[in-house]
Image (cartoon, rainbow, N blue to C red; front, side):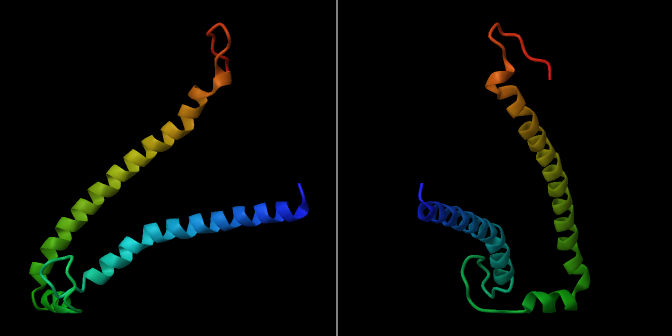
Length: 117
């Protein structure tokens, strides 16, 4: 393989890795940005942009007790979601660590006896 071809392959690998990282970052952060932008929407329908408003903030300042109830409800749902995510993530990590060891082709001998690790 020539040096030029090796350099081109290295560049393509690096470019592909950068592209994958950028697309993953956009995939993760773009919904957060959209949520922040649409939280200041003036329209009663969530997906139709009618303009920028701060009425939600003004309403929360004028009636603080009424603003606390949704915050409590959201914090409950967030904490339950966080707990469920921790449990599912732990189970997924356990599966990713142990499953490849069970699926290795060399882990089983010819006569069906497993090797001792």
